[in-house]
Image 1 (cartoon, rainbow, N blue to C red):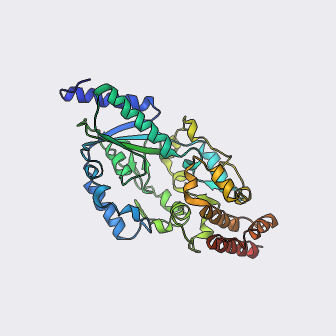
Image 2 (tube, one colour):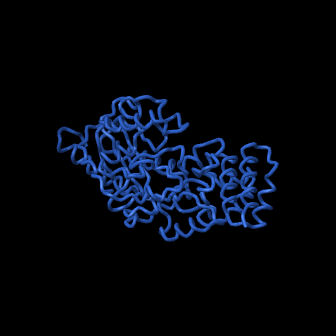
Image 3 (spheres, rainbow, N blue to C red):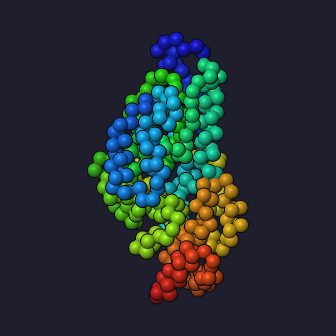
Length: 356
């Protein structure tokens, strides 16, 4: 398909959206590369130190907010979203409320989304190439300095809610994002409008009060950061507040009114593996490192490493109701060679012993 005029570009843009949906994306939008407002907000957040020790948030300089610096020749961004919720939210709530069950953020229950979505983005690029011939592009899935949420909002996929997740009026927030940076001057979509209004349920529900102001998350307090990104000791003040959360936290999504419109995923790769959607803390705590690596193969969970995995579960066991089985399990790790494990196991044992 040769591109000669605006009409050809309009047809191509519509074709790209149709192709994206045929690949399993629920929505595809297109935007330009102007992210100056997002750059201001990002710099303000970084200057306040709210990124904690996530140095990758600033080490790339302006590449994050100036797409053409990240991939030369970029003039448009194709933003795609894909639902991942594997179970009804009522079921998720029940798992979260059971203190002996391990709660893992629902996005991480299946195959690593980076791999799934990157493959689909590459397929989309191949399809475009079949139509117009070679063009410049690069695919991204949360693995490079990309302002994916600001891009999604500009592309009309949703607005950034007060919890900092992207919200869609028809689908809530349980979806992944992926981008194709392209050198095609495609027509752009209208940015999504904000619809949070006066609601502050996500702010009020946050166990550690990490949402310190509407649209502002302090990573240093966030359970997702503490259980996934932080490699050292989790501050004691936050440990009792973590409950049974051992990888990530969905509390703010659970209470969002817009998630009553959330759709269950059709993607088989996002279905739970290893029964991680309903498994007891003690069973996971008994995994040795070899078992952890085997059971989390192809999963986003693996990247936190075994020490952080046991650290997180130890805290959850410390928060669980007192039980001899729990104390017995914890004591087996009391002399573990990893200092980070010993520290958190000792804390958990003390918590169990202090309970009536």
